[in-house]
Image (tube, rainbow, N blue to C red; front, side):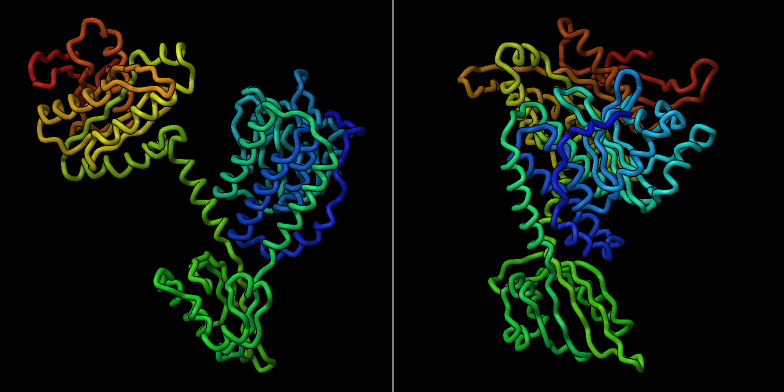
Length: 531
C-alpha cells in the first residue's frame, strides 16, 4: 500500500468541535442517520463547487469523519499487483501507517477489500473468517478499537476505480438506513468523476467553510425548560426560529399548541405516559409552526431531579428532522422503484409477491406471471439514440399500468423487460381479453420528441399458477421466462404474441427432481401438448 506525501490535505476544520457535541447522541438511530444525511449534503455541496479529483476525495474523507460517526475514512485503489494505493484519508490514520509497516503480515488478497473490489458490491461489518491469515487483520485492528467497517466501490467511466472504506468503533455501526445514504453518496461521487474539470482550490475551501457554517446552524437544537407542572420557564432562540413562538407566546398557549390534527395521538399518549413515569422520552412527532406549517420534530425530554428524588424540572430538546425524514422517504422510494418509468423494480416486485402469492393460495385464486420483452426496441435505440429509447420505455410503462386492473401489478426488471402479475380472472377467456387489451394499447404509435413516429410489439411468456404447485415464485418466473424465449423464437410463425404454461407438481422421479409437470396450451383450452 502506498501513500503520496505530496497530496494536499485540507486544513483541519475549525468546526470539528461542533460535531463532537453530537457524540453523546450517537446511540440514537435518528441522530446517526441525521449525521450521515448531513455528510451526504456536504458532499453534494462540494461536488457543486469543485472539479478537482483530489479535492473531492480529501473532502469526502474529511467530511465523513467530521459529519458522521466514523473514526477513519479511506479512499484506496487496488493495483494490478494487489497492492493498495491510498488516494485520500482522514481520521485515525495511524492504523493505515501500521498497515504500511507490517504489510507483509496482512494478506490483502484474502481480506474484505479485495472481496468488495472483485465482486463490486458494498460490504458492511464483514466478519473475518477463522485462520492464521485472518488473525493478522484482527491483531492489527485491535489496538485502534475499530470494530466495524463499510467498503463501498467507487466507479469512474462505468469501471471499477476505487474503494471508500469507513471504520467505526461500534460493532454494528451501519444500519440499513445509513447504508442507503452511504450508497447514494458513492453513487453521486461516481457520477461526478465522469466529466469533471479543474477549478481553483481557493473556491473549494471558501465553499467548504460556508457549508460547515450552514451545517452549524442546522445542528442547533431548540431547548425548552419547564417546571414539574410543565409550566414553561425558558425557550432558546433556536426554539423560536424553529416554531415561530416567543417565550411569552408559548408560555401563554402551552406546548400543546404545537400539536394539530395530523399529530399522532398515540405519540402524545406515549409522551404523557413517560412524563407520568420516569420522565424520559425520546421520539419523533409532527408539530405545527406558528404560521401553520408542519415539521417533523425529534423530541428528547429529560427530567431534572432534586436531592430527595423528586422531579423539579423537565428539559426538552427539539430538532427539526423534516429534511432527514423526507430524504429517508425518498431513498426508500428510489430503492423500490425504477428511476426511468416510476414502476416497481425487482425489489418491489418481490414485496408484492409476498402479498399476492399467499392471498392466491389462501383463496385458491388464479394468478398469471407474465414476462414481457419489447420487439423492435433495439433499432429505435440504434437509430434515434438512448433518449428516444428511454421515452419509449416510459410510454410503454404508462400504457401497461393504465391497461391493467387495480388488482394487477406491473414492474420493470431492467432494459426492455417487464413483469405482470395478473390475478382474479375467472377463465382463460377473461385472461385472453386482458392480454388483447394490452396488445392494442402497446401497439399504438409512439411519437418521439423529434417528431418521428415509432412503434414496438410485444413478446410474452405466461406461467399460470396452480393451487397444487408447491414451488416458489422464482420457479414461476423462470418458466415464464422460458415461455418468453419460445415466443420470441417463434416470432415469425406465431399467431399471437404470447406463449402460455400451466405448472403443476408431480411426485419426483429419478432424473426428474426439480422438474415440474409443464403443459403448453392455448388460451382457449384446446390443442394441449404435454412436455
